[in-house]
Image 1 (cartoon, rainbow, N blue to C red):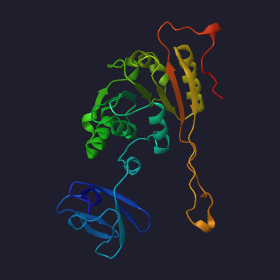
Image 2: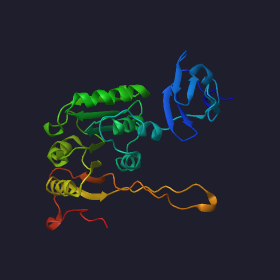
Image 3: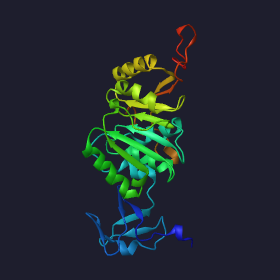
Image 4: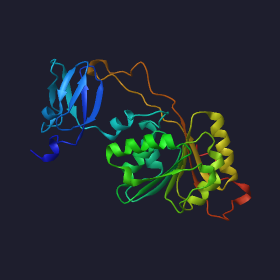
Length: 274
């Protein structure tokens, strides 16, 4: 059996119980996982094939899986609202984040976006994360360390509107209540034409950002939201679940034009993409 097919000490594992409740922890020799459904010894999990069914000392069933990035993000320890996976995937694509990229984010929070960016830029890329609150960045640091990604992120305890310390970055994302105040700094930090993005909870905040983008040398602006609907997984009764994950934020994307680039007759490129 391939070594990647079985668990090893030090692996992060996902246990899912019979009620579909997930538990994520790292395998450590001599340790125990304890829950109201019984105790599972870490040593009993080491060497098992991923996808195995196991039982606690009370006979309760669990399934042993490798946690995906989606699992890890949903179950991050946090003290603030996070950017959810349904937005994160689209953000990463729109910002064209990949191995070797240099990306700025402002509004570290608990580090969900930070973690996703660090995962994608690889060991040769860098994420530069700005927040005015050191306590929030400490949470993000711990979350990154849990996955061994802390070396890929440089933290700055600094308000975004005071300017970014990097230049010619490949992408920039703002998760701030008033992102328009950071637009001059964002434009200076980005390579001309590189992707800019932001997330906001209310339409009023989006309107204020749009005004700032129009006045600040940005173009090709788009606003969207991501709605996610799950379905019952019963072949004979396939239909949507009664609840769906609807609005969790508005996404705004744009591109900064090169300095001195004018637009014909005051036209704003990309002001309405529909």
